[in-house]
Image (spheres, one colour):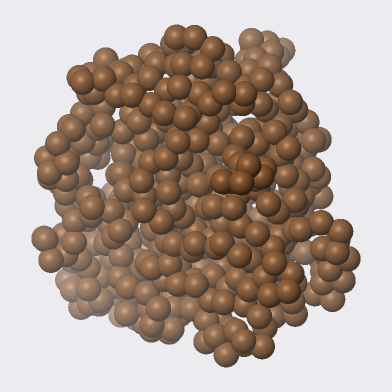
Amino acid sequence: MFAMNFLRRCLVIVLALSLAISLAACSPVQFISQFDTQATQVPQLVVTEGADPKTFNYALSQESPNVFGYIYEGLIGVNGVTGELEPALAEKWEVSEDKKRIVFTLREGLKWSDGQPLTAEDVIFTFNEVYLNPEIPASTRDVLRVGESGALPTVRQLDQRRVEISSPEPFAPLLLYGGGAAILPAHALRKSVTTKDAQGKIQFLSTWGTDTDPAQIIGNGPYMMESYTTSQRVVFRRNPYYWRKDTQGNPMPYIDRVIWEIVENTDTALLQFRSGGPDVLEISAATFSLLKREENRGNFTIYEGGPDTTRLFMCFNLNQARRPNGQPLVDPIKSRWFNTVAFRQAVSHAIDRPTIINNILQGLGEPQNSMIPETSPYYLSPQEGLKVYDYNPEKAKELLLGAGFKYNSTGQLLDADGNRVRFTLLTNSGGRRIESIGTQIKRDLSKIGIQADFLPINFGTLVDKLSNTLDWDAYLGAIGGGGYDPHGGATIWSLDGGLHNFNQQPQPGQPPIIDQKFADWEREIASLFVQGAQELDMAKRKAIYDQTQRLAQEYLPFIHLVSPLNLAAVRDRLQGVQYTSLGGTLWNIYEIKVVEDK
């Protein structure tokens, strides 16, 4: 399970801290009575998620939350407590002396959730026909590119249980990102890869969308999907062919059914939990003190997992390209502001992070300054020289005036041509915390004469703007920071990376653009990420990633905000929970038990 959660956190954009869709048809009382009845039949776990899944196709997913942590595994996993690599579908692996080749040996008798054998042929299909296929916009390919040339690994089958993944040169992340990627079923998906539609696109691009019967989705993880009701719930049931067994030979996971309730409003989710509904609730600092008083009476425990590895930021659209008809992606007037480094630095100085921490996070957080999480050994701290932007409106104004901006008689900020500085700041709707932060940023920027029109919108619409139409000014969002290895950020920093959102290139099947420009610092960070992947010595790798963090903080493609503490409320009837910032609440779901008398 955790291999998928970890990889998705490294590869996938998360556009808010709390996402969701309305649970209009389910009041708290209905929620409790319906699933109390089911709980008397089989051991089950009920969780809330903030949004509907956007796809059932792992290779095409760039969003969170998603279903894949329940239904897929890779060759290896990552321990959610220690961060160490562990066997998963592969029982072992061997790394060559030159560090260019890894041979994985699959476990005997592996099966897919439909009972079909899972063999090395599935691994070969997954890599050679899906992830490394240029016609498929898979984020996994971005983090497997090797060297300046962007060469991809070679994957070949040695026999029915052994697969070799080799790199043309030493590539430090090969084991983690090659071994950790989900393995997909060749017998179910190969036809969609080899068949094209009337427009000449492979059918895989439209395969296993959320309109597919969930029972047809074949996986290899601890659970399989049973049903999906839009804007209400996803139901998972135990995969009878899952490979894990406990020390007594009992099949795992122990919990028969997982109910993923879709709840847009965080207040509704909180009310349902307090009424005895879901078993797990990711909570914010705003609700911590309330729930802390109810722990004993409510028969639940609040876990604290350390600073969130998710990177919360504000970002401007730096893309200066045009449509083929000559229309700029971004209003040229606004684009000149956004592409002025002093402007971005001034905005960063204008944001009152201490107030965000004290008022919105109730003191349960800290300032954030890097895309690499504080828990990573590659993190560069302010004490080691990383630039920080303290709250200083006067410094912000000084930077703006030095860059040619000016103020009118009413304190409004104008550019050198007299245009008022005003832009739209987007985020996804439904999360109290993210919307509170956006409201404060709007207020903070007004103090330096900038009008930010804060607009929370539907998550799907936001993703479409960021990844497809590229039609946006600025957005408030988050990216999964991953854990140990910074190379998960390659898809963010590579010039053609699928998550290079601040200056995005179109992905396969998206509208073309022309005359795109990349800044020197942007190219340098991309190059440094290539070098970091090539370097095997940890100290030298850290020096490389230190420089990426210095450049990113100087030029601010992402204006980092705060890191809240990870907090979760978990019913005491769940036994075996090991909550951490790295792994989350359910990273070891296969060994969690429901004990009804708790």
